[in-house]
Length: 127
Image (cartoon, rainbow, N blue to C red; front, side, top):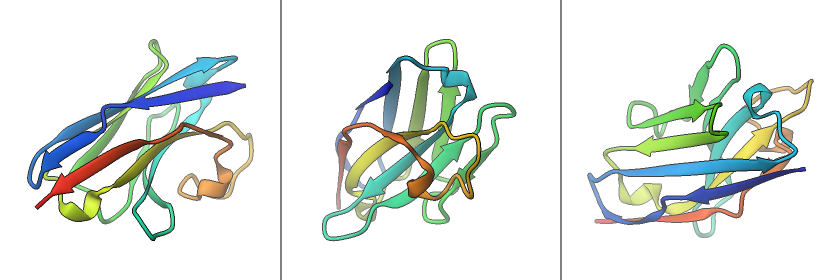
């Protein structure tokens, strides 16, 4: 079992920045996992934000955040982070960290491929 705990959410004005972190614990081979961030705004479906592979650390981003958000990982600390800059009110959502540990998967942007999830952290961007 893998436990994921997010931190770093909060309230920020439009144009500001936040950094989310996710710590993995438990029976984990963290360095081998694909890690992802997803978000769910009120009344909307949960959507892909960003993902980072293990080796090499290829990254993918949703078009809505590309150029503003940066995903990174520290395998020595079993953490993954999401640096969010130039935040917009439409970025307001609960942000979830997730781990994809499957050997075979179709897409690392598909939330159904992820088998471990954190509890989520609220990000609110005021206009």
